[in-house]
Length: 273
Image (tube, rainbow, N blue to C red):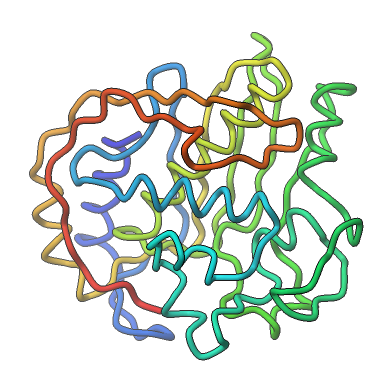
């Protein structure tokens, strides 16, 4: 997948149309697909050093159903600060809330939503165990009725899970909008981890990972960092091991072990809130 990702950077910088966006000038294109087999290794980019701890802590935060950004800040993960600082670090009914409590009324990030709304994660696990050929194993974060309460509407809006002929669990993630330099590598790794967690939860192996992107864009401030990344050699992929598996997929970051990760150095670029 990393070679496909580098090709996407090349394509956007060469053929993307420059346009004004909500938060800056970008080069943009519509429609991109990336695919890999998770048996070949964990798709964490090697052409730049990735913030692995942040990826794991954020997914753990989602799967807890939390929307309290202070929980991430307490762990020195600041990827949500820019979008939530003016709201006292209340992200609103974003990913985790929709995953665990879809349809529930949202008040604030401190309320107890236990038993409220629909737990989509639990439903997908149930279907994988009882009806593995179901076409309804869909996880959605897109809730138009609550977008005004969110600090940012979800970018990765839908995940569909599928049991392959070899009994492995594959996932296709649909992303309406992708900051290709900063955000998309994070989203690829997070989706791969979610797929592995779900597959192992139901006693299966992870299969293929497909990422479909609508608006794929690179911010003007990221152009030079992209140019540097594109000339770096791709290294062998790492693997991950999950310890202390839970029935409901809630996990601690320390329970996910990254193995044999080698990469080039970090490439810094401003995050556009």
